[in-house]
Amino acid sequence: MERPHRRYSYWRNSAATLNMTIMTYGGVDICQSLLKINPSLPTHWQHLQFKLCHLGINYQFFITQEQLSIGCDQDSEIQVGEQ
Image 1 (spheres, rainbow, N blue to C red):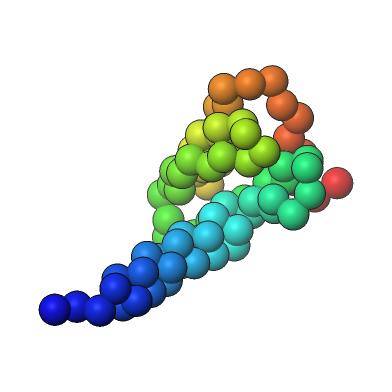
Image 2: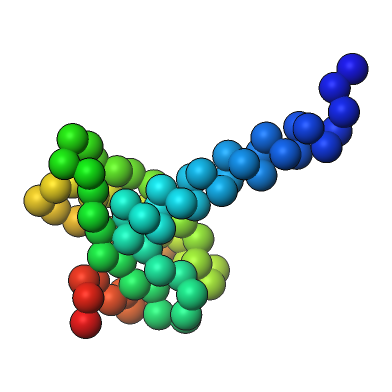
């Protein structure tokens, strides 16, 4: 029988990997109330697609080498690029 802590460790590690991908390649910064995004996909990636809930707002991101598409379920302000 598998110990419960091993199962939770798997989910914790998976979440950390996903978080790292979103923050590094998606360029998402959720450290402040204003959501910031500055994507930087590796050249061999065609796209990155993910969902994110930040301060009760649900976002959908679709990022390619040439385009950034963001959808959300409420009015919100997002900083795109380095400003």
